Length: 216
Image (tube, rainbow, N blue to C red):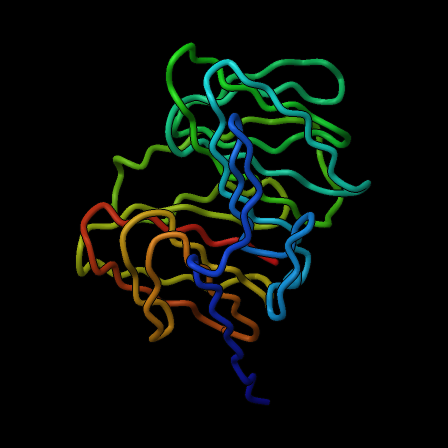
């Protein structure tokens, strides 16, 4: 039986945004007051927010019960405190899965903004854990999984990659640079929801291009 592949692009310039003087959050999927046709959650992937936090500011997050939370610093370090009161510091090159319940993110700097991703999936969440990866090892996909798959890779221009997902649904997110994924052009902060792809292939179209693959 042949599996039919379905694909849907989420353009960065159509993201929702919530902001104040101290915090700005771009929503690739429906979140808070942002509701737009075609931006519904994809599989178990409920939230993909691109957040910027002002110096010294903290913000409490309250995901729904049973939500798995993934945190990924993009620019600068990110401090967070989980529901048990334990505090962690994530550097670029770290990622975290946060234990169940509310948590607080904090900018540990006195003068610098930080940028980070918050990814929520409706899955059984584990205890808090930090995963370390090295993007200087380029042109390979680093597996950040503890349970459901997610991975990250940095590629030089014209370098290619492939993977065979363990799920029928995978969300591809371009963090930096440009990629062609499954013959579709993606720019920074664009996303691509894929259903039924037996193999996912991509080619970097710029140097130091970074993409995420998230099982959904």
